[in-house]
Image (cartoon, rainbow, N blue to C red; front, side, top):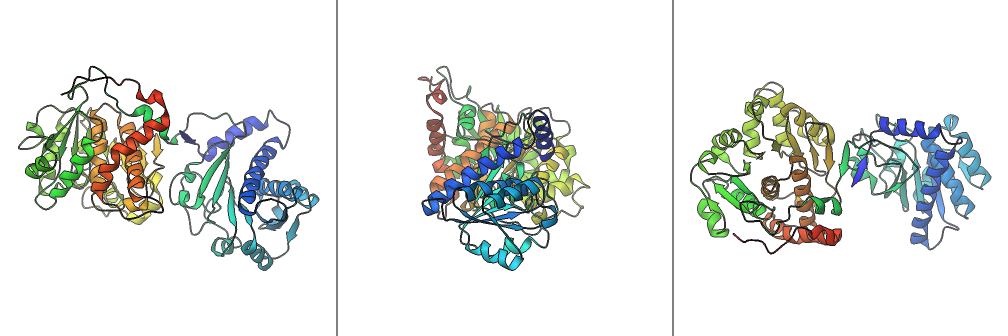
Length: 509
């Protein structure tokens, strides 16, 4: 699992470590790791470090110092290193002295610096470190907009990206690789910052850190959470997920939600709604009940809202009245926004909300004064994904899966997971219905809401990647659903034999 820590926590850990080490040791560790990464990139790009053109963009403070020391190490290996000082009067003195002693030169003006920047084989972005806020200063903005031929390596965080949130005020200097020190920063995992970071590489510097508030699952983590039937399992012991979805206008949403649910680990899917005939024709194993959730019989979790149309109000009310986890999506979210957080106030079982940013805006408006409140702008919420997910989770006391370029899962206790899989081709009609069914099935199989949402997003994104291929092609929601078993197997195979423990012959239906 990738663990990410806020700047405040990192600073405290750095201070504690520096108090026990000789002065400058921590910076030397960071610079050595940074220089080693740059050397590998140059060797891959040009076959050697010697003779490569390297530009160091150095701001004030320790971030600029890390870049200057790394530039000095590359200069000692024969690279032609030039440094552009964005704040000459506040440049890191020792780092600058080391660069000059190694044969590096300082560029005197911006025009020359931009010319070197455009021709460089490698650029070290040490303009702004993890403490930077408020966007790039005027003297740095031309580098964010300039063309370049070489690879850009960000020092700890791309300049212009908020390390704690991933937000970008104005422009940021996009990196091909970001070398971060000690721990990942949340802004490297969450868009728009994640899109600016490129490939992120972690360099250990010996920090002792508390448990992280923000994390990203990897294959082994997901494999450890997947529900696996044992020798005594039957379909009821594995869990039954109820799906209340579809309407006369959107019958396909029911089919897609059921398709996701059938591939999420629960032993059976129970469907209620107007598309029963279409569902049984396509998925004859589905248990169909007439009426709403209240008369459907026992389930271990409900999925409510995909394509729900005019039936969403009744379905939501009846599902929320049940003492089981409930996932609310699409039209169910619109109805919940109308009712506000009070609709969930009496529930003892958990609730999982799966909005996109437009639905998130309605939920926040509903939490701030009911349906008559003016919704926040969806594009503003998309630019502040971490804060948006946390706000909804706190307001509704529910786990929130905020869909988008980076899917963010937040629970009301403050824990956050960000999803590292997926592709922009997932922005297609019906993909959210598949995700809702998949996550609901994982809830019914016994996963906690944070785990169910995180695992569902991971598998959903992995299935889309498999379907889209490389470099990528359009996908459809049914194709994503069909690829879920392969994604499931990919995860378990990569995790090794231990992921298969608990399997047996089973007891069938």
